[in-house]
Image 1 (cartoon, each protein chain N blue to C red):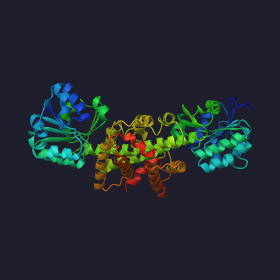
Image 2 (cartoon, rainbow over the protein chains, first blue to last red):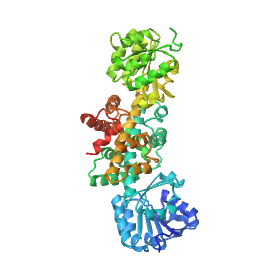
Image 3 (tube, rainbow over the protein chains, first blue to last red):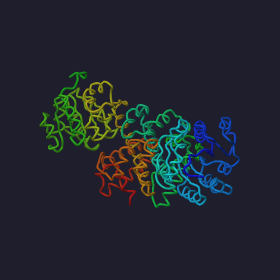
Image 4 (cartoon, helix red, strand yellow):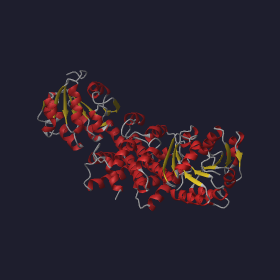
Length: 293
Length: 293
């Protein structure tokens, strides 16, 4: 199988809120789509629209020339790629493997090595933009791997978002996603503390937002999540428990690199308190609750 | 003197980088301007353009029907307003007093009370936008005080920026500025840590910025200060030593309100380390240096 050939049979593994939207775009573009998910009922709508069901990740890999994964935790990624009868073992030489899960950079490198040993090609390609970005095909995609492999993946990845950036070799997509989460972690702490101060000082938080939302404090977290905090809307754009997973990966990688990140450590500590209170299925903006008590 | 009358003789006290620009706009609009500064040489250009020199803050107050102050620390504000032969003592009844220094909310309330006892009117009106905002008349102005007094001040304040928001009674302008600084404090920590991680991971920080600068991490601190961090440009848009002053005021007020702000406390601790290294005259983005060692 030539590695220059555009992918024709696409596999998609992991049909959560984001995965379903992303797979739907691939299907809508007319591609042959093979899917697997731990619970089959989440695949129903895609199957009704013409997707093919596979009974395991390995079966998806065997049926496709490009496999995309969007699962939960690095342990899930490791199992479906490197486990017995998994993706790497079952994929034909030349298959393009793209993990879009937010996962660990070092695991991404191990998968790329295992794939290469089988004559396959791997990219790590985590995204930002959340469920809304996935639904509206406005994801940012951070890619680690070879330019030639990205070129081959591009017609499919482009169906999910316009901002696709190659950062370097295997793992650099995941590293870049970590940078994104590290910036967000302390920023949401700052936004939360600023609005908690506003409320405690007796100010009207909405008027405060009007006064400070256009200056040096402005940004996505203040201007998009700030109004949700003020409205007491804790609905998840991004789950606290997923955010905690990401912060754990980032802190682990930083530790391996000998890099102290006190702001990130603090943010994780605060979000762990949220999880301990049973609030892990709220959106990240619910951190405000910690400052109300 | 009627309090409804538009101010005609404007006083400006404090001709630092920002104050000079702000006073210059008032002069350019054709107002009679009376100025005082601790070191007279900073007034030279304004005097050449027609401003009148006064030998003390009290002399400015006695000569004007509106006095604007833009000085350094709350202790300076207290002295020029409430000290012997100061602004409040020398101002004629009806004079409008506008402190644009970032200072403490409780001091703003004390000045408003002292002013009212003399038949004068006080506003606290700190700004954001820095030296560039001051120069280009694009400051955001956060106002605490009475609506009628703001109405009277508006023709003059409008010369400095378009976004003027009244938050409530005396002190609420300062409280709102504290909200702004609290958001910024943790945000710059996050931006710094994200870019420090990028560099340590061997990524090209400029490419990382391209990948993450349009999503949930985006904002003034990442998109405007990020490139300066990457370029190693520590020139002050906002001095670390001034930022430390603001963070100290915010933490003091929060403590009085019984509000714990761990993100803000951490940011102050990190910036104190910068000051201890003799880096207090750098811009806030120089925090990156702490993560390089």
